[in-house]
Length: 161
Image 1: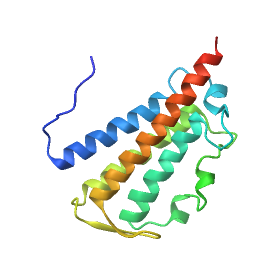
Image 2 (image 1 turned 90 degrees about the horizontal axis):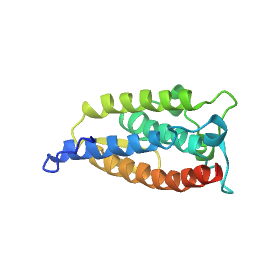
Image 3 (image 1 turned 60 degrees about the vertical axis):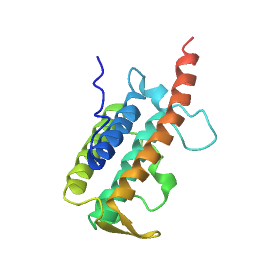
Image 4 (image 1 turned 45 degrees about the horizontal axis):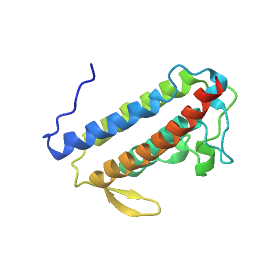
């Protein structure tokens, strides 16, 4: 039985819970797939199911680890080019990318929990952004990519026959 969120929670808990649900949906895209299926390219862009989860870890790091915590992309190993966040290395696997995404998200949570929603981080292009906005943006970003992934997964599973 699926646990239902607290629909009357305060703002912070609501943002945290919705982001956690979107993170879980992204990871569910990879469940039961072979490594080949997770890497399968079905669209002209770099988007693959495994690449979506890899990109999501990148987005978490850009917003929470860099923008909020003030670390650099270089020290985190975060690419400057967004396309590189979708590129899969030969040793990327469902397990390694999923594990990395969980680790990055746990660190994002630790960083965010040390800040109030009104606290501000400095984004390189957008300037000052609040923690509240970062949560809203990450919810939007991960929900969009989970939708992309739903379509790709449907195509992958249909190809199984």
